[in-house]
Amino acid sequence: MLRKISLLFAAGCLGGVINSLTVWGFGVTEITTNQGVSIAPQLTPAWLYPRIVWGGLWGVLFFISWRRHAWLLRGLVFSFGPTLVQLFIVFPYKANKGMAGLDLGSLTPAFVVFFNAVWGVTTAWWLKLTRVA
Image (cartoon, rainbow, N blue to C red; front, top):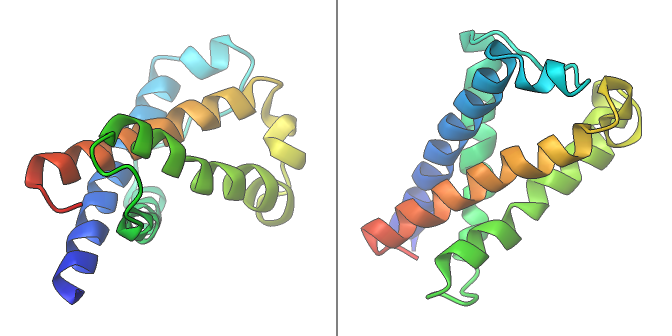
């Protein structure tokens, strides 16, 4: 069981890396900015490391044995956990960016859903590839 949890954590960390690179890439290429969303982080260890660790912690969600063979759907469904926390706890209460991060732009929720879907699909794909969950 401990082995499985550690592998789920590692898969979530990989999802966190890919998610972070996607967020950063959208900022560097000004995709978010061009859509009126102020999400354009710099790729620094201080920004990246917590995102990797949180990705790993969220990866433990995949311990839930739900629709094991529908890995893509599973990744998308489980991505709603971090999405809801980001939109309704982190943005309004931790970052003071308004409910759902709307102070960053009206399309912020859509980008958050997309970025977290990247995390969920990456994590689910890796677990499918390694036959862990």
